[in-house]
Length: 272
Image (cartoon, rainbow, N blue to C red; front, side):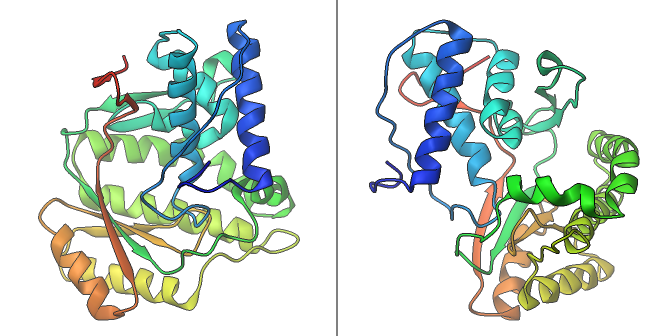
């Protein structure tokens, strides 16, 4: 069940497959009723599968009586959705590519309060995207840009990491926008081409760059969807939210601080 309604077949099959993985990996049996609630749009490019499979992994392993390390939980969550590996730890997180299954996990590089950035999300559309991230990954190799993107990924990661650790917003802004643009360029030049940007997406992206030239600490990034994440410095988040509404009254704004990591709510304690 998702938000009180029976989930679509595709979602149910993904959940069932992940529970099968957990049973096999942990050497346990048993079935489960899964009830999930989201407070943001699903399937619209705001990483709903990442949070969902992180939550499912933490809840399911706890229900099975297992208390696993953060690394083990990250490894298992990744099997349901790659990005879910990053939703287990708190704060600013690095996901290691790894050469084997046991090496590909995520861990924190800085605590949540290390740099109180804020994600001001401009929700342009709540519609479920027609082509999901998994399908997009499957065709990425058909783009002539993908090889260059992969070969330079480590450099962008290091730049982003060092910018975070130095609290260098300008440095972070440049690499965040470059990486987002590269990902979408690959999708646009894949066969068949895949376009997630909408006219409003581009309008916001151009506005964000202009606001930064005016001295506002803000940059943009887009996941596999049309909605725009405006990453803001702590002093500018409220102003950016107001500017987005001024830009288009139809834009829904969701604000989020740096994530605190996966928690068992009934246990009222963070997993570590």
